[in-house]
Image (tube, rainbow, N blue to C red; front, side):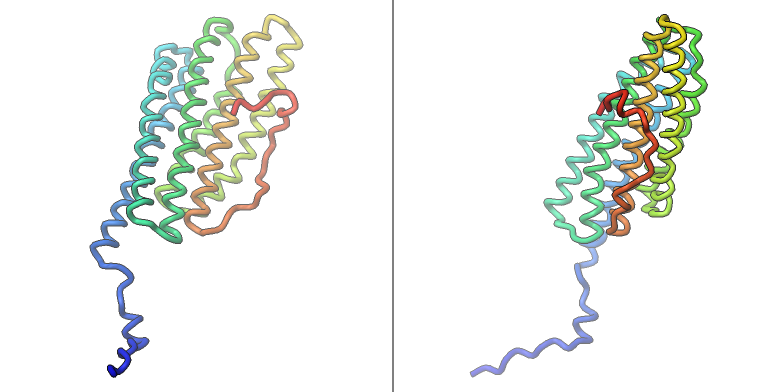
Amino acid sequence: MHPPPAQPKLKDLENMPDEPKHIVTSFEADLKKLRDLIANMGGLVERAVADATQALLTRDPDIASRVIEGDARINAEQHNVEQFAVKLLALRQPVADDLRQAIQALKVVTDLERIGDYAANIAKRSIVINQVASNFPLAGLGQMALLVQQNLKASIDTVGEADPQKAIMVWRADQMVDDLYNTIFRELITYMMEDARNISACTHLMFIAKNLERIGDHTTNVAELTYYAVTGQTLPDYRPKGDITSTYMASSD
């Protein structure tokens, strides 16, 4: 009868590597590529929002057309990220924080794709605005768009930097976007009540403002996903929301 095999000592177990070094290195390279793909898509989305805003404020139909045409590229980048993330999940079978990063990628690109759609919608309506209201004041929308762009950039940066504190800052900043949206909404209602000839232009401007507000919401979603991927914890179910117009306008999502 053979003696039972010797059990490894605790010291030996502690010194055993979890995975071969080349596998760990390869997986880290995959995660970096995933982050790079998201950053590339995020850059396209940032550019789309900035160009849509410029098209609106400068009344430039050529820039607006460029945003509309560029939406297809954003959709293609979403497909690339999703394919790579699914392949990573299938081949690497990550766990814990690595698994959260892969799942985060799949969800983040969905939010980024929706932001691209809203940017294209703003560009389309900016062309109409040029035709029906060439001298309508746009300062409020410009201020709101600037804040949305700042939050969007910060949110995309959190993905690459894995910075939970910056994610919290973006999460809280959405309140300011909602406050601006409410102010613009009230102003547009006043313009329509004062002169019925303003109704057509103000309706388009309301939808543009709503698109910006929804971009803010999706930006906040990206921050929440990043916070979860890094910490393994979720932010509170309640987040500051100041949009009071839901009883007047249905969400375009």
